[in-house]
Length: 148
Image 1 (cartoon, rainbow, N blue to C red):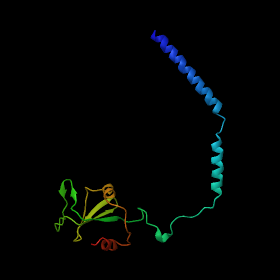
Image 2: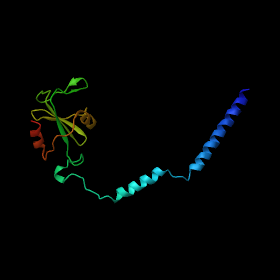
Image 3: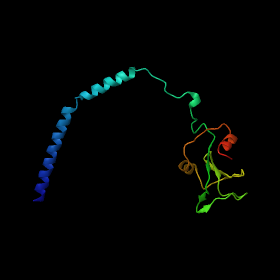
Image 4: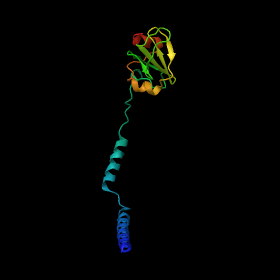
């Protein structure tokens, strides 16, 4: 009994497939009228004058491969792996400058002691900092800008 039902369903399915393929064959050579309208609009758009809308050189911001590094101020204590990071030389534990350069992160305390922090990476830096508010020609200019 079930084999008859299965055969009948298979025949119905093949009939539906045949109808679908016939409908596809009829539509194969046809082009919707909307396509012609879009093609005409594209031709008109190509004929429009090209305007240079790029910023002038004095207003452009350097790309990430044109800057030597980035830095940000980190006023609160920095906690890594459950412990507060402190400067090994002066004992400062807050008011850090975090420098990101050449895929390395460096910490600089208010006294000017620097150390490479291996527990941080560039991805961490990107997650915890916002967009740059200024660019500087020298490291000292950036330190002055950040109040160090």
